[in-house]
Image (cartoon, rainbow, N blue to C red; front, side):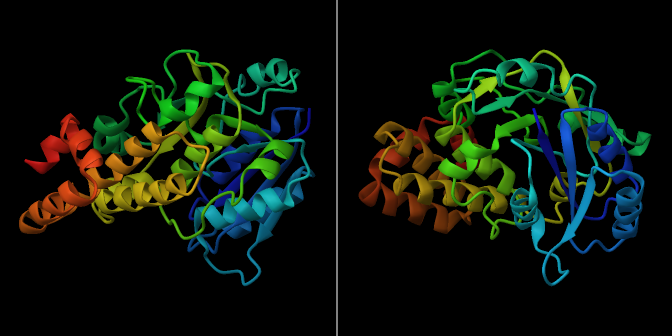
Length: 313
């Protein structure tokens, strides 16, 4: 089993060594691919030192050495990977010793195209915990029960009740299946939530199986400069980014002929919900009136959604 671990690197000089060394502990990891995305700190030099220290660590940058975002950076890593399997790791996160225990068994079955597990939380400082404990607590990010692969896509969309979510840090993919069935990989025009959009499409096209769900196989590192904590601190409007995410998913779903009509309706309703909830009051009601005539089914189903009603009223 040969696994390529892809790590996009941006503004992570303090954490990248830990991430790399957590991946190198596994003999199944044939390479750790660092793709440096024009960091403002000293991350590039730290990456160079890691390539000198470890033969399995490879370093790449974009053709213009510029900043292209996490999506384009992961895509470059995929293009450079030689492994039979692909795993991802954020530069400020790290793997635990059980990271690939389930994969070693499950991937013996050729019909298994991907395996997902549970992500834990590590606070790098007391201040980080004080700031963001309400957001992450000590919870696992995981699918809560074991499900058939056909239920993973609607489950990720929220159509299966408290199904739960999995993280890209805890996903391992059979490379050939991803290359054959998924195009594009990460959408580069999405600067945030591109991993969520990728996971939605991946769970539709590939058969993903549960690995270890009851305990963490990797840890999310929480500190003041996380992309998600920057969003939470209101430097980026989280509602706006969710509208863009669901707009993207809706456009893909409506053009995918194999998706059922009930799933397309659910996705369209989610897009309408965020779109309307974000609008100013007068525009909100104008949009509702418009969609009552042009897209009544999605608005009617939206009004049954408690979060939609809470945001709306």
